Image 1 (cartoon, rainbow, N blue to C red):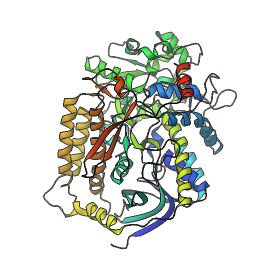
Image 2: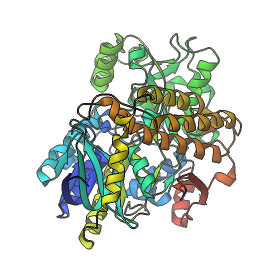
Image 3: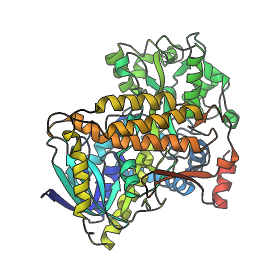
Image 4: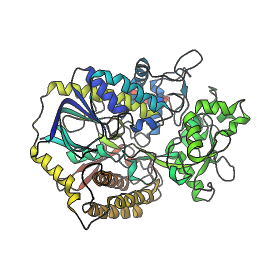
Length: 603
């Protein structure tokens, strides 16, 4: 084996978004040596694109809010296939994590009496999202980085991990490469935390940045961990649709939280026609009450635009399919209409939604204080991911932990807006805490040179091919397949076709070639990412086929109703001994009576 650079840490955190930084901070506080590997530059994590706020029952705006209501909202939004223990811990601990962030220097918007201001968001009964205008994720990353830099964390920027290193059934490190120069690196660790984010780049239209290629999902799967609930992919209702160069870029739910409404080309506010029965008692049935809700009136019900993301996305798709959409294949999102409701509305919008104002002005030459935006669903988030213990965040592999979007359980079939950022804080902290505890109780494991040699040879094979496939073309066709055949509305025929295509893409990816050398070679990076994208695409498709019902983010037109057979099970995916993908259904653990009572009390 060549003499690769080797780094030794007690805890290695892979991913430097909110979950990774929070895990690294917590592990450092525990007194262990921490290494942090990030695919991009530090500070460029996708967490910065989370705009609307952090969901936590602080009760600063409405004193009726508490962890029990937050828990019930999260379970209802997830259609009760959530891991209830994770949802409980999240609801209980989120307020402390937000206050902690404030103590570390986060600058939140404020109520008149100086407390953290909270805004309305889809699926939440009360105004619950602590925010910084529409730049909350950016403020979170800034705060965590500023705090973390003083903890003595070793940061390895612009590195990609190719495989997890194992000794028996224990993870003992990772093997990767430096993206600029292409040099391989070995990272020895007593414990590893995966915090790599999501899978959005498996789809053509996505709000996700280029790093979101399912790396953590694939690394864990290949190492022998289990994935759960991969069928549940969230399509955010409002991404930009025009011009084409900005298609998919996120338009925060905060626009609707501040009073923005959805209309079709006829000017009709279509969401009033589609209020689900289980949300009817909480949802306004007229424009005036919906506006009063956004203004903070406690006796008002939420506007239908603030229903759960899966529901709003399907309503938008319906309008487009029935030829009531906007000129460029979306619908209209209008915040400018509030000029009829409040004085100085333009300044109010600019103050509350500064990023959205500049985003549309600079990228689409649209002034959102005067004109409606054209929006449509965009692949945004995956509820499925690595199966972890709810309390410790350890996977079924000893020494391997996961947190954030690449871990699964808290969100069930559909995530509520704002829960992602509090999820990062709550379970990032827990992953770091228990990874450090594991590291203190164990020694470094033996690194197998053969594992490294096999991975290195596989990674370099594309340079040896001549008459072969273009990795960019394969990725583009995979994204189109997932967009067209495993998107918002699914059926068995199309998903079987998608599986067939994915099999062909695998064969083509095995023949993908790159030109040039290992230094500054984006074609090589794309080729290596393809393996991960193909794994998560197959996992999503197989899980969606297995769940023969519509629930949360999964809508099957051939099984349009919920089926109680699937109401208390998770889909579990693992790698079989022959290398094939194995899927099974497994019952959820029984919920304790005190949590059942909380749900009943808050229906």
